[in-house]
Length: 428
Image (cartoon, rainbow, N blue to C red):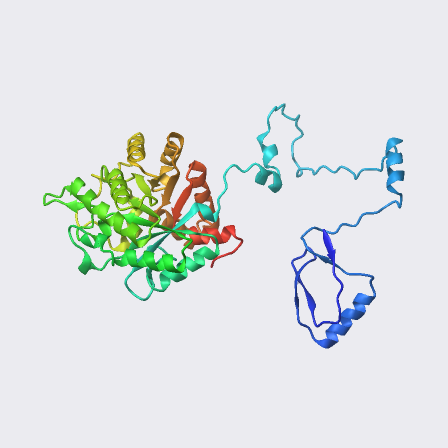
């Protein structure tokens, strides 16, 4: 559809963008140029300004009326069609009899239009949750193992990052705090300080951006002097029920500050039901629980622990996180979390565990989340630095694969960058 616009001698000039003869705006020009423009315009009866990227085509007409054309068609006098031209193969291509195939799946992949029509999985900024690291400082501190990620100053850098992410359609964020060593303890009491770093950051974000969704991490490891997700007994055993008691207080504190979704990542038994009861008892019936249902004892968490300085002081986390060799155990965890009141089930990591994402998707009616963890992010970034892969293509493919496996939402450090690509922007 074209639009016709008449112009006076106003000092304006058309701005043309691209090669499709489309015009998208006006800009000031000199009086001399304006006079020249008017003279050229008077030579034509009107000027057509393209309002879309449709192409003008040159078509020869016979000059006949519609009635004459219809009469010719009824009489069988059709115009000659354009010649059919079949592209040929290169020299030496063998001549073969076509295969008698009832199905040729490539037919539905032969053009961009058809491929887009039949695409089964879509990715949008609404599917992405951006993890953000925050600290007490004023400056943003780069994280060496995670290029492009920072420990953000909670007063300024955090607000700036959320603003930029919102600008490309990301509306959901999860906060991870870097706690000063002086505030860490064996029982993690700083985790439920109502004036602590996370509650302050939540209140600030809700004041500035009331429409965003804030997820929080419920676990003791950032607050523990031992670096574990729970309280450590003197013989090294992680105490389950005592830890759950602390986690309930942490979740309530976060809800009180304005969190939309609390996310227990600790993998203690019974913590989802206990947190649900604690939230309801305090009147936070509308606060959701995203349970880290299938969190594996993975080697892909290394860069994250550098970001928060939360490596275990001794031992590992294999007594509470899942064995990477186990598949059916994820169903046990999922069924338990569902019964206890979880609203979202999460799988962590994502790409190495797509089979688990699909397993939960096929066996639960709850929304499924997947966490593309720091090691996955760093692997793509490092490979791109050495020109082994195309960063943007690998990033988008990885996220699309996680969606295809069945994840409704993806926690990813690529969230803002990927959303920018989806919006047609490019990041350097």
